[in-house]
Length: 183
Image 1 (tube, rainbow, N blue to C red):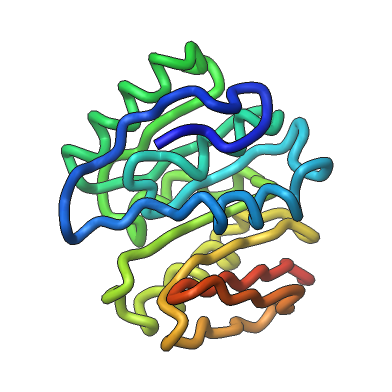
Image 2 (cartoon, rainbow, N blue to C red; image 1 turned 180 degrees about the vertical axis):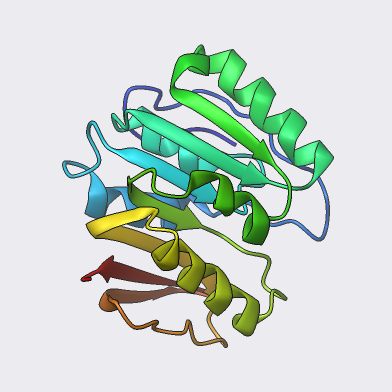
């Protein structure tokens, strides 16, 4: 796997080799960061369900100021650490180890511009809704901030009060929903 664009374009990254884990496809990453390219520069980002950290690393490659990775899998955390170290971006990155639903509480009232996540395809929609609601309640995403969620095209991402859908796209079996915090 490689960084697809930005200042680290083409740099090799490690990923988790497990049949139950599917890294975000290049075409999907490219779509996400094409739409955020100019906007993301200097922004603070949280990657939930980080896996190997590829989405957060793409954010840094595009000029994000700081990225918090939230991941509970021990193998995932090790891969994120190796990828961060191989790019020399340790000062811009932090890893929170544990379940996303609880780890985001550590970010209460620290304002971020972008929350990006790729939960497992079998992840419960109701649990994802609780996480989205919690991000709003804890005031983690700034007003006007964007949340991008990647998910199985057969599911529907819940729209929580205080957010508006600004874009939905489908790429094969993968869907993306972009939400903006409006209040």
